Length: 545
Image (cartoon, rainbow, N blue to C red; front, side, top):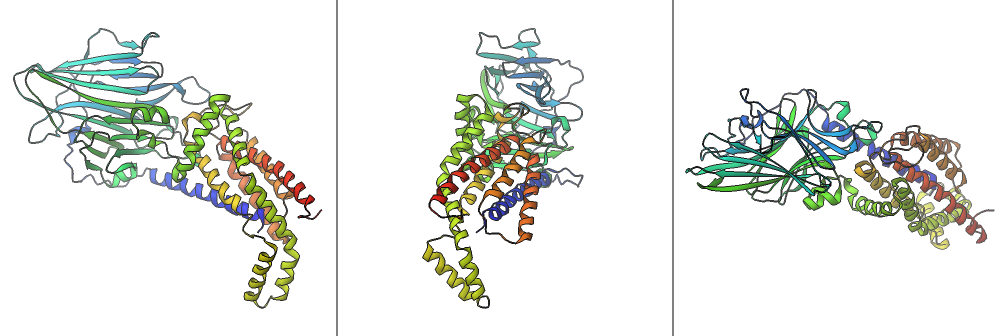
């Protein structure tokens, strides 16, 4: 079988698959103004989504910061209004930190964790009473000092009955996990019934400055997800929310809810049992949240409810440390079993060389060295097929009116000469899953976001701004095509192959530069290996000199 034709057919199918999957993602996330049915069989009340307001009480913004996070917390409700990732920039050419949580007029992405006073009749009813917290220390800015490993911000509120609610934010050095401890001190003589609720809210329409999926070929999932031991890890897209609300009762304590985007995630991890996980689609906003069962706090006793809020990048090791299932949100597609080992190898190499581009070059060398026996077998099979071509033409001419006899004679010739006509396809069939796995890995790994290589390549996760790498890749593919042995004699087929080469190169103009770099290096290694194998085959008289 002809190497170039097989290569381009499989490659074109691969690119077509990526385009189809990308279109599917875009189609699922596309916003439209269709009517929404909110009549679902659950008991979540409307107050849960309207928030708590109080025009008679004043509120202020408290700033809380460690070395990787900068948070702005509103004392009205005691929730985070804005969250900035200090180690990640909004765009490549700015010094402004990436904004993950925000409450701007154009775009809302916020969280809310509250404690509610409940009754036996409806323990999921949200307290309508407004809460404005106060700080124990009279200051508005809390910063983790160089000699500190942990920073705490306690906010407190005393209701009209004298119950003391203390909401404590805990930040640790180098961590995107925010621990939120909710302490309820029942100083009264009455039995207090309460529960813990939390929700994440995000606008469906995403302005360009907050949208990472600007490139068609880099479009990734933006939507909700949750994890339960019973249901495992599942995505729940904004489109699904429009059609049907999620409502799951669970007795587990390990579950979490989250909203995902390409490189970043906000997740809530409640450490309470008997939670209800739910979604809601309201006022052009998607909501996913949890509500715990009610807790009883006896007079003169207190109870602490704990929640962890992850606000940050999708870093596997750090997320797994917080919850050993949270790293599942890093989407490596259906080839995750290839992508994960490749990324771990890439990260291992990067720990030594300190450059992600050079790491990609090295991992390409490793892959091609491992695949060299298959590559050699491929070229040997192609050379033997080329030698047998005159005999095959003769058999075809002799039995042109008897297809069954022609196939029998052809198979007999292959057996006699010990030639496997499919031998040239095996390396390609192995390489294409690796290619796809690298695509998923490079598109979903935040470590490669804004990662520099050399010269003009300042972001290996985005396309080459000057299209130099795709053009070099096209040139190396053309060189491979011209120097490879071929049985193709039809001029029309040769023209089709040239057109496919051009189309394939055009597709790569929008691929991540890290992926194109892999293919450029792979092609260069192929040219070198091809030269070595051809010289060896010439010495063995397996190809025409």
